[in-house]
Each structure stands twice: as structure tokens, then as C-alpha cells.
Length: 459
Image (cartoon, rainbow, N blue to C red; front, side):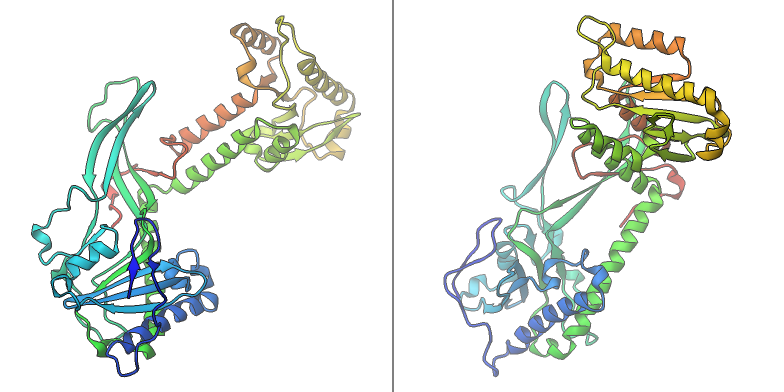
């Protein structure tokens, strides 16, 4: 069997070997069991457990070929993505006795990520293997390496599971997927204060990443015994593994939720704010549609929202009802609109928005009881709060900001905001209620430790 291993790539075969061992071969049951296991898992995900598909690794979805290397002291399985013609191939290492060991084939097939030494207690990862670096990153300075450590998975043979006849195969000594998770315990300090260990806000940072390897799953089993591999029990083994994956996932998520029950809500709100930020470079319609679906960005304490209510000859973008029956009329202009001209005078875009507000208020004064009765705005006054959202903060000078402050002092119930103001206020609300955002542009998840007395670190 001639094949080539290249880092980060599925195995390349020089020729297509037979996919079935002779029926009198001691390895026939091994091949049949692996194929039956893969096919059973795929069938279970399609019929009995479709809700587990997102959690199941590719080899349990039937999308992988398997290479099994039978060594003198154990068995190594490597599963590679293969959506066209998934195969099971079996080879022995006995042709080269000096290499007929797990300690040779585990790192070779895993691209030096998995090690299976005879004695794990004295084994040290090689310096020329994979490494993980932690960098210190700050504004105006190049990244600085804080920690550089060798990375690998070391299999402890002394903790090998006892033989079991309960399933259609032996229990593996190690079963690994290419998705890895690192959890860091850290403290967060106020940037304006000198950091003192123990005085900051503690948190767990959870970072998932994918190993840069060509395999999708990697398994190591004890010494091969033909009678331990039973094709008729493969379906039961596949079901146990699928349920085990789901159980481990649920237990781990529950443990993190116990650390910080606000994490999921915080993550969802930051996602929404990122989506909102991405809309601010475009037209008005998508922004209006987004705010219609998420009016809490304009008023976190609102109780009800009405889009597009007619007030006389003009239509509001929103009417919001806040606590204590306070109403807010909202006029939205596009993020590309302007508040002031280059000469410092008020731009016609802002003038148009103010005129809209003025017409609404005049109509309310003249038709208050009609509005309360026909539009359902019970308790609205003739002079409710009003908000104009227009333009971006980058187009405002300090003098422009002072003019806005003066205008709002003259009209206390009128608030003129840029879209950046809305975004900043929403970010501050989320940070105050659910916890600040530590990282942006990464998949890292933060779990603040609010109560150290009840902390149970996720396993």
C-alpha cells in the first residue's frame, strides 16, 4: 500500500488498493466493522438523530475514508474527508519490525500532533513539532510573543480502557477530532488604573480552532484482537458515540452557562451590533428595516413600537412607547445624509428632518384626541419626546457638536443623534447590563466569573 502524507492535506494514494480484505484474513472483521460503523452513524443522523448533525464530526456523517494501521502493540485509525467514494483501507506495519509500534505511527499519521510513547510520564513534546504562541497586541506597537509552547496530544497507555463486549468494537485509548478548544483564565483591568492581580474582573476565555491537518478524526486502539471487532455490533457502537458526543457537548455548555448565564445574550447582542455597524455604509432602507426588527437600539426601555404611523400628511418612521406612558417620535434619515455644510451652517438634510418633526407636533396639537383614539396611542401628549437619527459622527467637527448641544438645550424634548451615537449608546447598554466586550473580530467567547464561590471550572 503506497501513500503519501503531506501536512494539512488528505492522504494521497499512489494507486487504488483493494477495499476488502480476503474473507479468511484476520483483518476482514476489522474492515467490515469500520464500514458498518460509518454507514450506521450516517443512517442514524439521517433518520433517528437529525438534530445531532451539526455536532457530529465528518466521519460519523459518512463523509470520510479510513486508513487503519495495525501495529504490534495497537491500532491507529486516520479518517480523511472523502465525499466521493469513502473507503476503508487496512495495512500492517510488520514489514518493518523496527517501526511496528504505536509510538512511530501515531505521530506519523497525525502529522506530529498525536504521540503515543511507551511511558507518557517521562515523555516531552519535541521542540520541532507544532507550537502555540500567545501574543501581546497593543495600539501602535508590533505584536510581542508572551508565551511559546509546544503543542500536542500525548496518549497515556497506562489509562487504556478495559476490554468490553458491550459494543461492536474495543474502546479506544484516544479519539480526537480536528476541532480543538482552549480555555484561559484571565483578569480584566480598567485601562486607567494600575493592574493589581486579584483586583480585576475574572473571566474565562474560550477559543476554538481547527488543527491545520489533513485528517478529520484520529483514533488509537489497544493491541488488535480480531474477535473484538464485530460488524453486527457496529450500529450500537455508532449510536453510543453519537449520544456521547451530544451528552459531552450539553454538559460542557451547561458548565459554561453556570459560570456566566449572560454570555449567550451578550454574544447575540454583540452580533446584532456588528450587523448594524455593517449597514451604516449603505442606504437608508436596510437600516430602517433593521431598526424595525430591533427597536431596542433606539430605546432599550421601550414597551411597544409602531412603524410607519401617519400623523397628518407625513408618516413617522417609528413611534415608541416607553415606561410611564412616555412616547417617542422617531425620524430616520440615511447614514449618508449631512447635518452641517462645510461653512458650518445647518444642512438642508437636517432642516428637512426638523421640519418633519415640527409637522408631526403641529398635527398632534390640533388632533390629539383623534390620534389617541384612532392610532391607539393612549396617553400620548401634544409634546412628546422626538429623535432624529441622521448621518455619521465622522462628519462632525467640535463646533458642529456644540451647535447640536445648543439646539437640544433650546428644545429639551428633541434629540439629534448620528448613527454612531445610536451604536455607541447600544454598546454601552449591553456592556453595562451583560458585561463588556473584550475581543472583536474573533470567535473567542468570554464568560465573566460573577460568583467565584459557585465556580465549577468546565471539564
